[in-house]
Length: 247
Image (cartoon, rainbow, N blue to C red; front, side, top):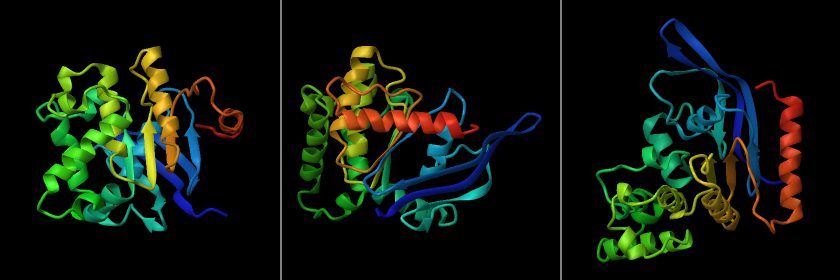
């Protein structure tokens, strides 16, 4: 049997509000094995993004973890401290956020933001100081090419506001895929895109299927021509969720 990559056990999270605490997650359980694709299905506001942010260790300050465990490759990431969770994020997992406008820093170019992802990863630390910048630039351009962005040499010099919504989303995907990770979390990456761009982005996700992938969507439409087994896997996930989950 495949190794357990991610294990969320009895997770309880709330948010501090004006009149007390708002319960958001009530006993979430989820297991992801190496090489497995898992879909988390639910209506808006049910806690999908909160769950994924808890895994990444980037919950907002008003969030309160009331109980439960999150282990990644056997390590309890809820007790490993800021440096430990930073190591997990730079080496073990990456995330595509649902709002590329909020995910990208408006005062830095696309190239600078991609370079930061590479520099602080295990790949960047392994680069020799001499020629490192050229190598990082080449990796950034190649990552943009993988997401079918036109003229990546120009795009790395652009700021996020100079790109369309679909192009910004592809940049976010490039940032998540630029270095090899064990776990890729995609949090509703097509929510703010039109139908045509949604299809293109979903095809990019499908092409990245060689990597372990944990996808969180309210709805997931596989592109035409997807293998029948992938469509059936998705139907099974949705049926199982709708039958058994109280969330």
